[in-house]
Image 1 (cartoon, one colour):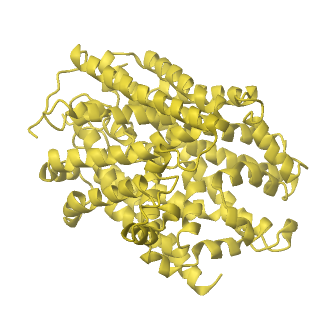
Image 2: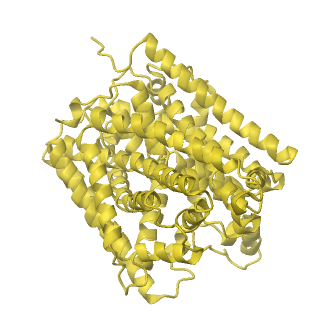
Image 3: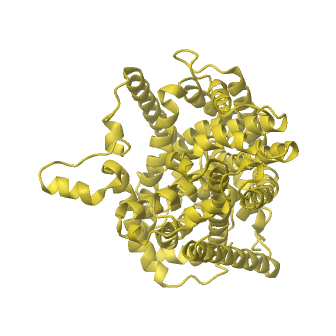
Length: 542
Length: 41
């Protein structure tokens, strides 16, 4: 079946699928870390402001671009952007929407496979009686670390193939019978697992099963407001960045989902409903599991080196083991199961835009496009698996999973709000709307949303050492130059602070690979338009 | 928990949960009034 004929079967199915796309590992691992490091309870103020003036407006922009272009038979960003104007170059900005989804799917499926593997390990009580060091080594050995230049781990590859197979199976079933059904089953389960874990964790009392603190002390630490942090630009940038990444905007997957709507279907209410569902999972559930349990068993000092990912795979299995055998297995299965559900509902959303491009442009069947997507993901994932220790995985995440998203969000906002035009954009957003969006958002969309994205973009480009902006400006004006942080885009580009030649080589080769993929996608788009396999674009006046 | 952090937590959770429930209920009620993805003809 061609993707063009497909539609969502129900509104709740669509909302759960979009919410599932947004809810990912970051909701449980990244949000608490960001909150702790950026003002605790006060972090929520810039977070909510960013959500209202940048996050929700961007959701409306992406849903609108998708539904608008969907009426012309497009379901992926090259066509969806081309439908917004006459300039032939517009479709090439859509490269991002294919590139990001394809590459992120590759490394994201790999992390997702860890959560699947750890769900099974927990179920079979693999960590029973293991001391902490052994659990850490188990994780390293699972990744094939320390086995020479390459990370060779048959078990990691086995679980990756199973995970990829599950993704492809869902995608092969189509929009309604695959993606929508998966969202309807997995999202409620994720929320139930989250509620169970939050309740179990928050009721840990000092002295119980070796707890050295009440779990509530963790919540207290997380939510204690440090109001002076609100004057720090670093905190505002971190909040805007967190809102940006948690909503999965700037990827091209929301556009794709919205392209399967009819022209008068609501998008205003659907977008905010899915967005707030994601916020509920992040703020209410995400902050109530990892930090409270870590504080209960390891104390407040353990948070000084808080790392969401390491904590998840190397520390939590040990902490669950403190519960009785049944609860311990249940804790592990629900935690890693929850992460797996969060992961797979996001990764299938990355598959659909790529497959839709192949279906729309080259008349691929769903089966053929599923196979093509699977092969591409497998090949692109291989470097992240076998060169994990040398940073290939991190390069994918940095350039594609972080930087590209901001660039694309900025580009699409300019195209939709300024080139297509705010008046037509406002009509498009409000067409068929089931809620009345306050008129003030018309001006927020035109001026404030792009300004926030530019701030996130510039912030990531030239982030100063330690995020200390005032110190950086003082240094600049006193002739000391701009102290670039190694994690900034420019710092990373220049390999600041990196001395390992192997890592620099792998990093450069990975960048070359990513650039090649980007160019090849551009050539595919050119070819698709040239041979006119897809419909003649019916553009509107820009 | 201190009074301050409890206030921050309850306010944050309250705002997010209220909006989430409000929008979900509203989406479901609207769905009942005019079914989603209906043919225009």
